[in-house]
Length: 313
Length: 303
Image (cartoon, rainbow over all chains, first blue to last red; front, side, top):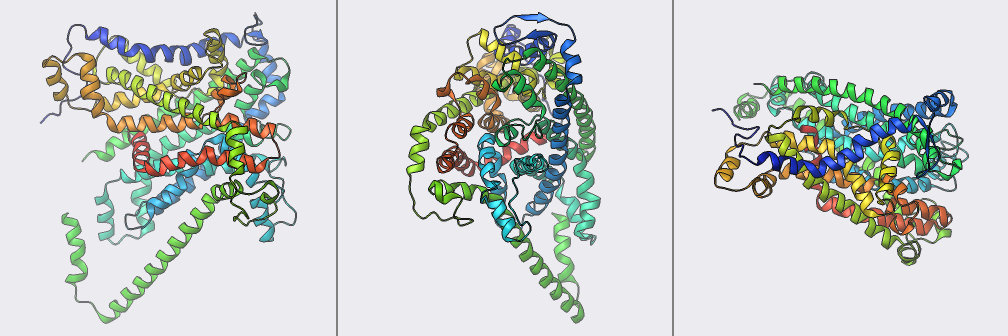
């Protein structure tokens, strides 16, 4: 029997009015907070604009020219990508390993383990950032105490003020913060794999590793595409964790793009805000993210195709 | 079903050779060993994982001198609530807490209702401009906050919405709608038509059909959207930060925490109490509703 779903067959006179009425509130917000900022951002980036409420003077591409020559801009862009490149592979591997362990139905207390690993996700990021400055404190902070006691270091490390350790430390904390959510995504993906496949493999005497290589891994690929791209885009947009742990320091060593934009637009550190210049940086950064979103779209289509093949009997 | 019975038949159906029996016992032992190792590993791992929470909770009862002098010892020498009183009243965390609840709950409710309404139209009706709008929504899912923060702040200021919690709520809601509309639309498009048709032909209006019949059917996706938006707005920092720069009384917990660190930089015990106040209630809510959380987030990836 044909399953009837999708666009309703009912289309009474007057429905069109209701449809636009239903779309209006969200359309207003979407227009004002998503579409308008794109257009306004492009215009703003072409102006010299010092302070909200002040006048905007059209300066053409001057902001972009200055941007490309600003060493700190490239520094921030590089830091954003470095941060993402540290976080994403480690977090996804770790969360996949945990998901594989916790996916077993016979494992007792698995929901307790899952809860514990998920806790950082629901803790407000800015609070986590401040707490972590204590945890990594060079003055008898627990991490340094453990390392000292184990004899791994002889003097405390000032994790967040040292140029070599600051960015990896913040990235490590972000791995801790977000592993739980990736783990849930992996678990959902694992549960979408038909159980009969495993049973058949076990009957055939396949080992755990063989099962992973021949069944789990290939069937996870379409989900992995989505999970990876969500993580990449999210990590490029990191702001609060870095702002609360290092505020971009020491000496811009952890300044990621969103902090660079914030510093030029809102922070008192710069004296007069430079909104036009910050907008140019935002556009450049937005285009980078848009390029990644395009890859995301392609990946999504690929993944949908694979999933359709997988569920087809 | 059939395969499972075949599997259980194998050991029972075969006459076991004594040597094979010995080997299978060795296997049982090895599996038991593996299991102990697995539990041991998971236990140690999760204890290390949640250690920061234990550390900050213990620090919130210690004195400022004790925090960094007691080393790794988690037990405070007194169980004083003084730090909490200081964070709650002096540092104004009672106000920050309330503000955060208003922002998170407000934006979650607004998001679920508005994106549900829009998703219903996209998922079940044909109308002019539908295709291009869906493409538009999909391409704007990942616009970074840093990209739109300047125009949004500018617009909000013209509308006199900066320095107000309403402004924060609207900003949190509006920037997140694209993905949620698409999630709702794809869910609604899979629902069978019969119920809706019956209701419509019985004379229920468009709005009534949606609120009384279709929206309740979309409960799983409502949970997904509500949980994702709640986590996002409880976690959010950029919008509350710039929207409350001139109004300290409107700060959310995260922004208030940073201000606290700036103002009382050596009151570690007070900060620990403030952090515990900020983190503990959400953890409690999460533990109580975790079934929903997990199912909700899983729903997002499955759609």
